[in-house]
Image 1 (cartoon, one colour):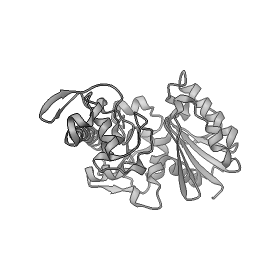
Image 2 (cartoon, rainbow, N blue to C red):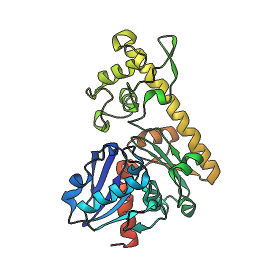
Image 3 (cartoon, one colour):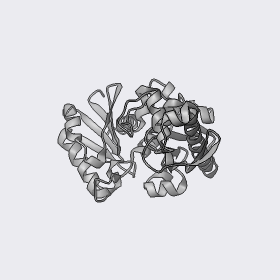
Image 4 (cartoon, one colour):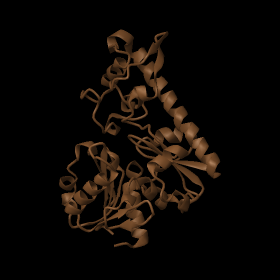
Length: 311
């Protein structure tokens, strides 16, 4: 099956599974990213594709985004099929292709972890997916998932600090937080040691380097200050407060989904899977060399394509 690749096209990242390895390109879809150029080297392959980048605000609506992504992939890799929200593969840019990447992950994992909840803590979002009733997941839009708690818009790297914090106690002062895009969750998790610099794969808010000190400075700006004003301790207090709120939000929704679906366990995936596994003391798919957790939908759609023999 070396002639088949799996592709996951998100709003910020293009992920490709090819012959036992994963390639991740930062590829902001709101700029109508150069997908054809990035994929043209795979032109002689067969591709199983999922997407969620159609929601990007560079498009007037989802259907325009779907067509752009579909055409861009087809121009590069003509022998491509697209996984949809019905759990089937398609060869036309149908609306049912919108945001099906998480369903591909569920389709792949549902037989091995049949009563678990998959928590995929990615760069931008957290997918909370019960695996014990796959048919009930089919056709669910992101709006449906937000309503049920299956999608939580907080991630390991790209979540702005004021999205979860409105005020914070720093150096003994209860302080309101600026709503500017000064720092993001990548800065939080880097300074707390939850990720390393290699994991921080998205641009920084200020365009500066990815380092412990630079992240502390970005966090300091959240209080309209500099690191010299509040010190390392103050910047770390911001990071800890953000992580506390993020952990609480995810934990509440995971409990809600487990209760609603009578699930009995949690499995963790995504770039932040180690964070999730520590929160829930659960299995971390990143520790399984045969499952490419950091790009799970790309690997999953490849496996589903193999299983269903679509090519």
